[in-house]
Length: 106
Image (tube, rainbow, N blue to C red; front, side):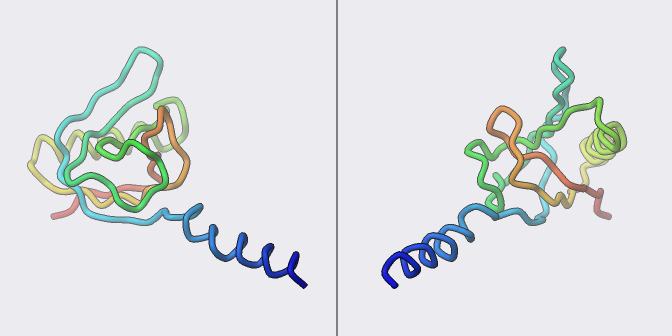
C-alpha cells in the first residue's frame, strides 16, 4: 500500500511541474537567427508557462516546417509594434521554450 501511495504522489505531484505549456501574449523586443539555424524571438514579459529555465526568448529551428512563417510573423509584429500570442511547449532549445504556434494580434 505504501508503495502505491508513493507512486501516486510522484505521478500526480510532479505531473503539473512536468507539463506547463500554454499560450500568452508577448511584446516582440527583437527577432534574429544564428548561423546554426536556431532563430529567436525576444519577448516581454518573460514566459511563465514553460518548464524551460530561460524565459525571455522563444527559440526554434528555422529548417523545421512552419518555422519560416513563424519567423516572418514575429518580424512583422516587431516592425508593426504589435503583440504576438504564442503557445509555448515544454520542449527547449538552449534552455529557451519552443513555440507550437504563434499569431500576430491586431
